[in-house]
Length: 130
Image (tube, rainbow, N blue to C red; front, side, top):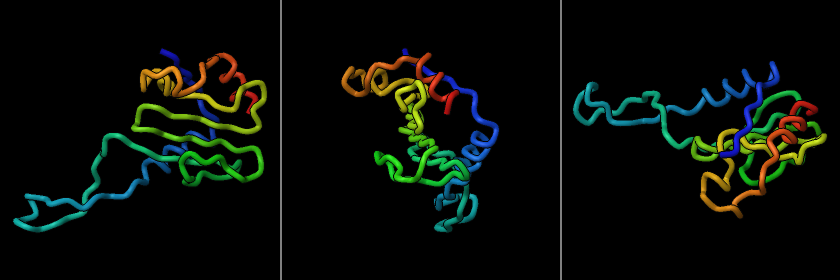
């Protein structure tokens, strides 16, 4: 299993966590509110998908499967089904510009063609330089 753990930039990690925590509440039937009554309540939803861009100043949502057009430096976090986080970053430094948190797509999908082989030390070095 290939994995990369990066301890975050002091400004980046808290902002990303706040952005992830700000998910929308869902509306569901609540039996405790009475028959046929609907009430908004916050729920944890399994299988989270989301793409977020840090443009050097702030976090924002971003379109999945599309590289940013903002000037460098930037960092893109694409979360797939709560299991894979693809980190794309520019400038790349000594890394390739793509790292994975958790398992790689090739491991998750059991398909060697789903992603290129990872060099964990190289990507960790590239992210440190970023």
